[in-house]
Length: 351
Image (cartoon, rainbow, N blue to C red; front, side):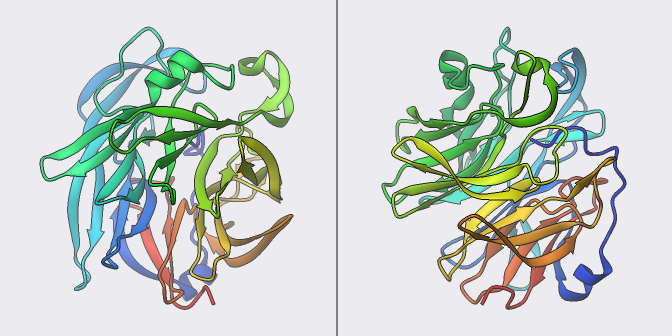
């Protein structure tokens, strides 16, 4: 989802630390948070790959490289006594210092997870890659194959790539997926796994010619999260490399039509509705000439047309969850050294 970031140094903000309290530590690439109906908090992490070597395609160069694969992507649950339990494991793929695994969580009679990505048109995906899965007592079970739909339809007309990321359940009972690789919003039937297209997202204006987009000065939009609200979908767009300041935004999808809702943000990685009915987004970092700037992540309140800062000074946050009380939980160091990831709590941040 986020390419070429691990070369940048990570920094912790003393201001953010003074406000936030860590509730889970020692994570490897935390990417998603969810409060279940019983009030318990779940977190999913990318993991650190594994010992099995497989051939993969580098997202930066398009060349074939060797990746390390293993079942180190985990779904964890925070228990009432503060302990952490492992709920499920998914495959994790490491390319150099980067890794990718399960991404986001939703609840529909149990846990649902977006898992992995795939971009090799000449090979069948490895198990649980580019899928929506259900967590069962026997382990993860594939429900929908997003790669198969992307390969057959390729709705944005660009390179074949599926990375199911953002995940939510609509009032209609369907599961909706923001696919950061396919640049699309999918609708998934929860029983049959049938996939249909809600909307495809066009490229964003970019500062340089992009060979992957026919030389146009465009970046991939990279949808990262979706909120279903009153029959309308709100989708956060990260923006692709080089992640220019102000290029990210939240768009509205209504009747298949896509329009801007809030613009001028940078590197948006999550979007959730709070108990107050307002939308809240995660800014992973601001960017400068050297790329993402450590310690500039934030949680933003989304207003029609723009954004307001709620909590700032965060080290590479990736996801948020808001308790009914207004307590805010944020994953930090989603991009960072193994074990540096954490979940922080900001008591009463959303009022």
